[in-house]
Length: 151
Image 1 (cartoon, helix red, strand yellow):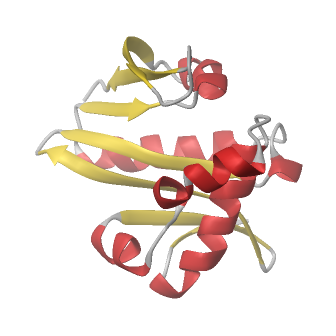
Image 2 (cartoon, rainbow, N blue to C red; image 1 turned 180 degrees about the horizontal axis):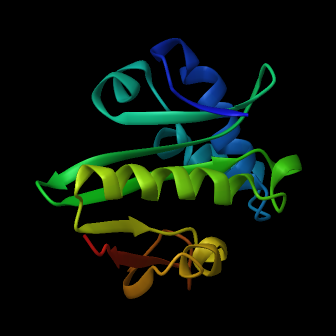
């Protein structure tokens, strides 16, 4: 099992993982289609942002990506695992890799907009909810979460 920097040619495969993982939470195909633009990982996104993939043997089973908000704050933009691999510790492997990478880069703070169903996952790593963003779905809010790293 390896975590590797994604290549722009991975964009379709990473988009597929993202959409399948989002659908895991019970969203309809129609809703996933409505969110298609936000769930699409483009070649230019991979060229512009840090995107890492989790490869088991020859198959990619998950990925994460981030970008700088400023010199000391990173936005964790994506963290997705294929539905068949959710609950097997692969999300934890990705998150630990991400957090270790941030620690080694001297990052002070990480922020993210969480899938509501994934909030407990992030909380296990020390992220705290600091707000919420209302979504297009009635009574659905994305938790705004952050983590301050000890340097």
